[in-house]
Length: 237
Ligand SMILES: Nc1ncnc2c1ncn2[C@@H]1O[C@H](COP(=O)(O)OP(=O)(O)O)[C@@H](O)[C@H]1O
Ligand SMILES: [Mg+2]
Image (cartoon, rainbow, N blue to C red):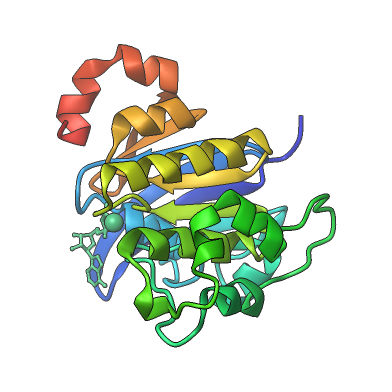
C-alpha cells in the first residue's frame, strides 16, 4: 500500500499560550478528497494554517511525501506542492487576472497535464472574460474562482480550500462545487473546509469532524449520511 501523501501525528498548535489543537492524527492519501468538518471556532482554519506553515506546531509532526515539514517555512512548503485557497480569497488588488495566473505558476515533476492559463480559463470561463481586469475590479465570486485558479497554477500535489463558498451567491457556489468535482475526477488530492455539509459529503471520500481541537469522528460520506445525530451534535446543522 502506498504511503499517505500527508500524515499528521499528535499535532498540537495554538496562539501564544492558548492551545487550539490537542493532538490531531490523520492521513490524506493521494487522490483522496478529505473534508474537515466542525462548528465555528473548533480549529479547522488553525489546522490548515499549521499544515501550510503559517503557524508552527507546538508538538507533533507533519510529513508530506515522506518528508517532515512541520519546521519548514510557508514558502518552502508551497514549493513542495501544497497550495492553499485561504479564507477570504486574498487576491492582489493591483494584479490582473492573467498576472495572477502566471505570477505563481510552478512546474512540477510528475504532473502529466500542467495547469496552463488556457486550461484554467477553460475551467473558469468567467476568468477568461475578465483576464485584463484587476483583482479589485472582480466580484466576490470571480475573486474566489481566481483564488482557486491561482492555487492550481502551482500544480499542487495537495490543494487545500478554507471556506471557498463562503458568502457567495448560490449559482456561484454551485460553480465552485462543479469545479471541485471535476478536479477530483482528475485525481487532485484535496483537503476542504466548508459549511455546506450536504455538498461536502457528495464530494468527499472521507470526513473528519473536529470538536474543540480534537478529531471526534471520522468516516466515509456514506457513514456520515447514515449518522444524522452527528450533524446536530458536532456540525450545528
Ligand atoms: N490569530 C489568532 N489568534 C488567537 N486566537 C485565534 C486566532 N485564530 C483563531 N483563534 C482561536 O482559535 C480557535 C479556533 O479557531 P479557528 O481555527 O479559526 O476555527 P474554525 O476555522 O474551525 O472556525 C478559536 O477559539 C479562535 O478564537
Ligand atoms: Mg475557519
